[in-house]
Length: 354
View 1 (tube, one colour):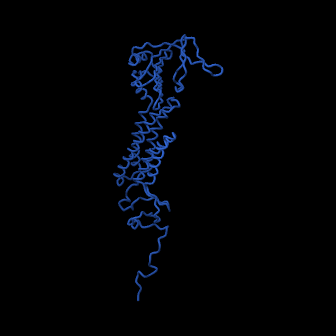
View 2: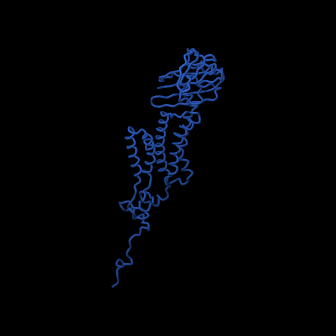
View 3: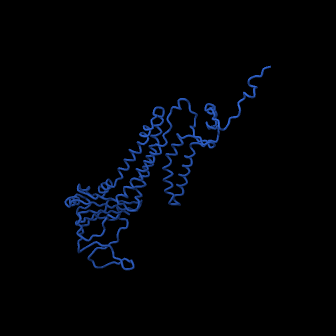
């Protein structure tokens, strides 16, 4: 009697080797996720990084009142949330046995024609936003001669802005990919579309952080006239914290333009300036041989303790003809000054809140 085909030992399917790929169609019918390369069920889920990121946000936020250095960790953890969220939404699974990365669902013939999510451009856009919103403004401040103190209030505002733009970019990228993944294949098109938020929005934040724009904003807030058209050598430096801060401005202009600037500044109206000259100077308190400050009582010159946070380009010692006007912008607790150096036709403006 002839054997049935199913009884033939040579015809029976042997065990699947680990080096042989599993049929994706067979894998798709299984309820448990399997690696399409080796068939392993030891799969690292794509939402694992998001879970770790959320734990890091919670832990660093709780430890911040105890360790001040945790503020940096909190900022980094929250700035990474858009990236880990993106990985959890469109990222792939990873086999822990062979290291193969694959989509959570088996690909069909239609899905195989879809473009992969442009991870490189998504990450590059996030890096571009961070550079333009956070790093760039601080580089501009350093080039403008800023001191060593950070502009904490403005820096925190820019970090928050950067975080909001990262979330906006995430939403834009996900919508863009879902609409165009079956129609766009060119890498250059994906690069242009994905880097658009970083270039446009990040560039806008970078542009509005320029010291020259900050000068105009400060002058308007302090009820001073705009910069004269002949103004050159314009410098601006500001540092701030939640409870204190200082603003320093310097520019050189035509003497007639300086007079019009003073006359057009409402904050200076009705003031009689205090004058300095070669016979009445403004000098630092002298020190003795041991470095101790002495307090002269000659009554001829004005003595002061230098502002240690002032940039190098801000003149504090006056030995020639100059005029000083007092200045106190709204919500500034301490008096500042507008100092006109008539010898060099240079204006120095100082304001302080504490």
